[in-house]
Image (tube, rainbow, N blue to C red; front, side, top):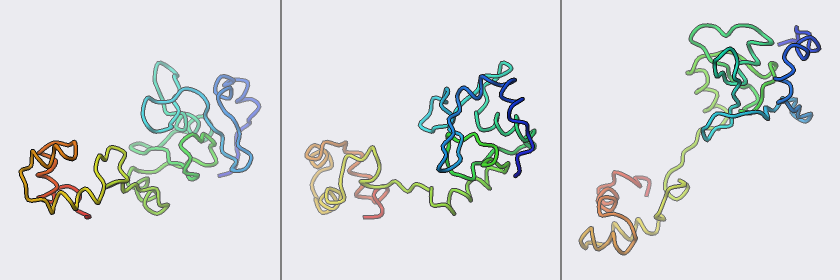
Length: 160
């Protein structure tokens, strides 16, 4: 994508947008430093025309044009904070999911790597080996009897 926009005139008209942009010379990403959505993700947001718009989508529409119907704006740089129009392309949700898998951003958090895990692989093996009542096993590991049942029936922690 070539730069077909006049950056100086855009800066004059949308000075407030560029106030929240910090250029990262190493990657040529334009990092959004303004408001963000209230999620775990780092997508920025812009309040414009009584709408709340993702900052990267706003940048794409500002510099390139309208996003085709039923499509979203994808990052070629894999940086959620980036609003550089050179790094943004339209595509479907399916395209975005393919990008995620191909680029190795797919998260497989299971077992101990999951942030909410209370047990370790060693604990799970001990639970499966223990033939006692679920409540007694649960009390010794500080979890519920229901969790013990799910582990023993291999509904969770299937990979162990």
